[in-house]
Length: 434
Image 1 (tube, rainbow, N blue to C red):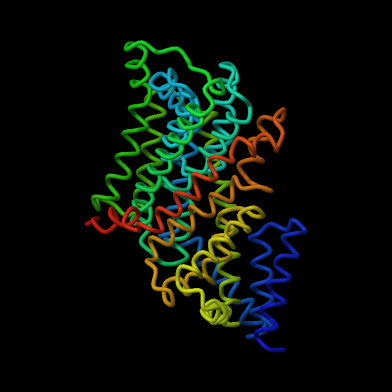
Image 2: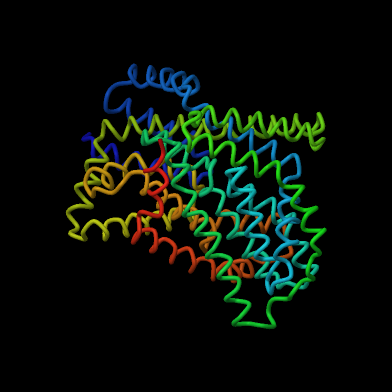
């Protein structure tokens, strides 16, 4: 049997296993080892399992994943999400749709510390939705804002998705983190502008909240200085070259722990829960990562990236036409599978085409792909953030949530077009790092 036939059978088997709800990491590992054994030999395939697992879990650079996951878990356990929302509300709640704007601002702040889109959506479905309903915000708008705000988790550092992309493609993770800052701020600004536009076009649709006093605003600021200082310390250290991304993860986790303890926001039980949550999440990420590496060896021996490169370049679409086709593929896949699994599964195949053949910058491409993948989290017919919100707020239907998120999908598409037209938005800060 030729290598092309083995590759096709491997992909069919992979998607069949995922349809049977076999965990993605396990499915990729099983297909990768089996396919590698068919092409190279069974002894080599079995030896590959041991060396890949050992090399992955002992790799110093991969330590960035559990460290930033621990940082996010500790920050979540210490109640920072409620403080961020309350502070944003005191400054913005008096505007029309102000609670929605405050939710976007709080999501951005929480995402900049936790780095998880799903965690951000789940947290603010609990924190912000009851507040918006209390002030008579429509359920569609309230859930749509939370779903859109949740996607900010992958853009602001520390982003697990950007970190994994950097590990797979051997790009500088510090530069990837910094590259996401301006696009993330652009996303926040455009989401807020979308809410303002909805409020102006439909004056009776969004209510106006009470204006907070200067004393209340000052008190609210005192609640959030510590997490903001932690974020500036970690990102400033990365941008200034004070420490590596892995060291930044350790400093962030240690800083989050110290802040929580000194502010008396972490009980022994909460610390234990944060450690367990971070450990479980890291184990899941490493399982997917190891499976992807095994599957990557299978792709290498079957020369799948070369075949895909030949196919895409033969279409005659030009570099931006091929890029649009790749982004469309990610939008479709984003409706069907987890963002991290999607990145790990497809980047080893697509990356050589984009960088070597089409000549796009790998840092910029990482930002573009992560943005496209995050759009899949809120895109119908299936969106991970939508499912998370539906779980937390079961009385709201899927159709209602998708109606609320539709304007933000349009905003995201427009943001993608802007970043494709002006790559400097993502590349300016990384190019000026020491």
